[in-house]
Image 1 (tube, rainbow, N blue to C red):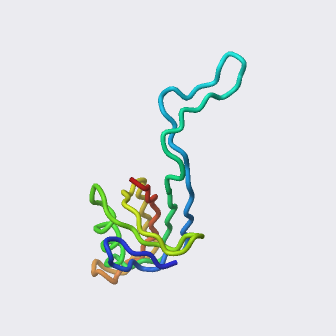
Image 2: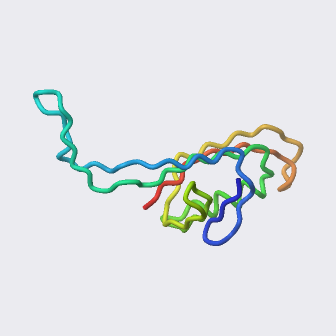
Length: 118
């Protein structure tokens, strides 16, 4: 799956799972009768699970550099078509899967992270 951060196309992701969640306020809680009383502040906030496999170190650096600012724009294909949203990234996990040398193409990495709509 191809996606863009700040207008720049990233290497294709092997997993790209857009999801949507509601944000509940501090007054959301279960009452004594067990019924949930929700104070929904915002509906449909996007969360995207992204995974890449077999990235060169150069590609890994490109993605991490693009996704580490406090906020960025992300463009991707959703069920409603192509969308662009303001977002941030979290939960970066890197795994070295092959090492040959210290050059930008001398190692291969897996990367996973989450993109969260602002």
